[in-house]
Every structure is written in C-alpha cells, then in structure tokens.
Length: 244
Image (cartoon, rainbow, N blue to C red; front, side):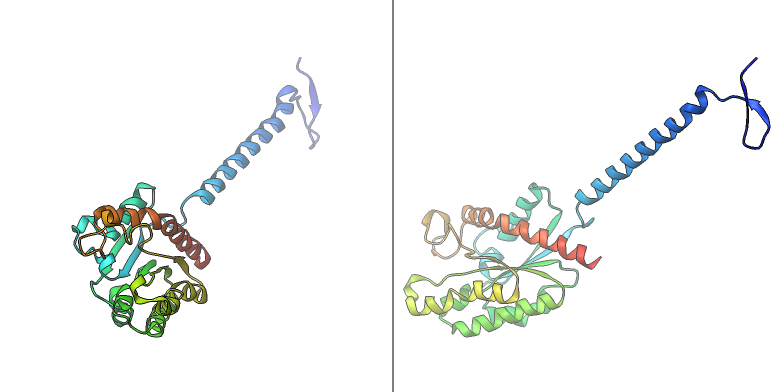
C-alpha cells in the first residue's frame, strides 16, 4: 500500500513523496528562468537605439555645403549621409546650402530652411563673411542668433568653424577665428573647429578657383567631421531620452 499522510485539512491522502519535494525546485527553476528573461529584455532595451525612427539633420551653409562645382551626389551632405549610414546610423541629411551666402543671410532664411521635425543642424556659415571682409562682430551676432533660435526649438547644433585666409592679415584673423569656438562655448553646442581642415591650401583637393573642394576634397571634409557628426547624433539621442 502507498504511504499515506494527513493533509492540512485532516483528510487522509496518498503521500506526495519525491514529487512533492520536486515541485519547489521546479518553481525555483522557472522563477530563475523568468528572471533571466526579464534581464535579457532589459539589456536589449538599454542597448537598442533610443530613436526608432530616422534622425533628420539639416546642413545649413553656403557653397561648401551646397556643393558648388561638384555633382549633386558628391556634395558634402550627400557624402556625409552615406558615411554615417555605412556606420549603421539611420539618418537623412538635407542640403540647405546656398552659394555666396553670409551668416546674416542664413539667419534671414532660418525658419524655412530648417523645417519642423528637424532633429539637428550642422551650421557651416561664415566663409563668405570672411572672404568679403565683413566685420567679425556682425558674423558673431548672426551665428549667435541662429544657434539660440535652433536651441529654442529643441534642435541639436554642431557649429562647423572657419578660419580667416592669410591674406586678410593677423588683425582680422585675431577677431574672426575665435568667433566659432566662442559661440559654441557660450551656447553650449558642439564644435568642429575648421570645416576645411585638411583641404584648405591643397591644390589636389580643390577646384581651379582654389576655394571650393573637388569631390576628393569633400571626402576629406567628411572623414574629418565624421566623428563629430556621430557625436551630434548621440546628442540627439540623449535629448530624446531626456524628453521622454
């Protein structure tokens, strides 16, 4: 006859024996498995991109952005977008470059050049101000207003700096060159110090005018700014997390 024991209610029933002892262990194993699954889900959530959508970036600039003298597919915004996508970023970069434009002119068209839904802006204005010898204080004021207005709209900004040409003299350079790092620092935004880094003055990377990069020159510009562009996208993600 099977062993029998009293249940808590006093009834006489078959003893559970090994099956009764196994049940707690089964529940414990199931609990551990569930806890492990929850931890895995949490890890996936933490390490997954915060934005489950395409990040929209506007490149706001002059002929260096617009792609003067190169094919549309070779322009800076197109090459930068391709480089970022090759590194796994879901991003679209709109070309809002206008050849010959100054910082003040960029400010005048800011609202319609940077539409609603823009996540970030690469601000690359100031080269024409320098080439025309405009007062640096005018350039500084325009760039400051552009950055401030973009920030007020919740848009993350990367300032692409410019440097004065040597023929403008040391006095002008001393007033012009600090504009970009100082505006970026004052406004608390990202800075890429020199948009033409590695390209300016290199005849093999520029068109015949010596001012505008050729396709290879644009590629050098993209390679230089790429890490900072990735930092810009990361900042967009941080902002998105903070607003959720």
